[in-house]
Image (cartoon, rainbow, N blue to C red):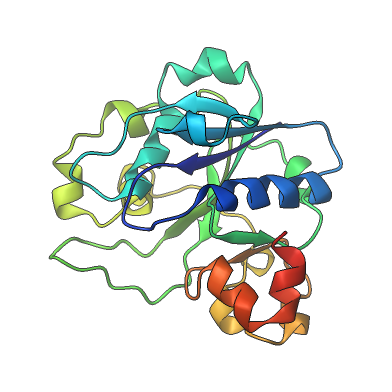
Length: 218
C-alpha cells in the first residue's frame, strides 16, 4: 500500500510539520508494510520523506492539486499498489488495518456530512469528502485528463469535481471519519473512529486546546 498526501502552496498554510506528523501517525497505526509518499512542489523542505514533485497550483486553491494522484503518469510510479490518500489536516486515532484490508474496485471516499456552502458563486455538490480516498493504481485517470482550469470557476473543490464526474461511487463508513468539531474535548466521542477530520479547528489549534489531540498529533 502507498499512503499519500499532498503538500503544495495554497490557501491553507500548512507547515512541513504537518507532513512529518501525518507520517508518524500512519507509522503507528498501519501495521503493514507501506510507502509514505508526499506529492509536493517543495521536496527540498522534506528531504527525508519520499516525494513526488507536482506543479504549484496557479490561480486556484491548493486542494485541486490532489487530482495529480490520478494523472496517467502515476500508473508506473504506483506500480499496481492500492493508494490510501489522507489530507494533512487529519488525526489518525486508531488502526488503519481495516482500510488496508479493503481491495477497492474503484475510487472510494468519505460520504459528505458537512454544512459548507462554498463561495464566489462556485457550486458545492454535497456527496463526497475527499479528505480520505482509497483507490487502486490507475483508477479514474479521467479525473485528471478531463479537468481544465475552467472547472475551478464553477466548482468549489476537487470533491465537487469528483462528484460531478463520478456520482455513483461507493463510500466508506462515515463512523470511521468524524469531524473534530463534533468531538472537541470529549475524546470518547471518537470511539470507533479511524481518522478524525480537522476542518475547524486545524490540528495545531486543536492540539493547543485539548490534551487528547496533543497526544495523537505527534
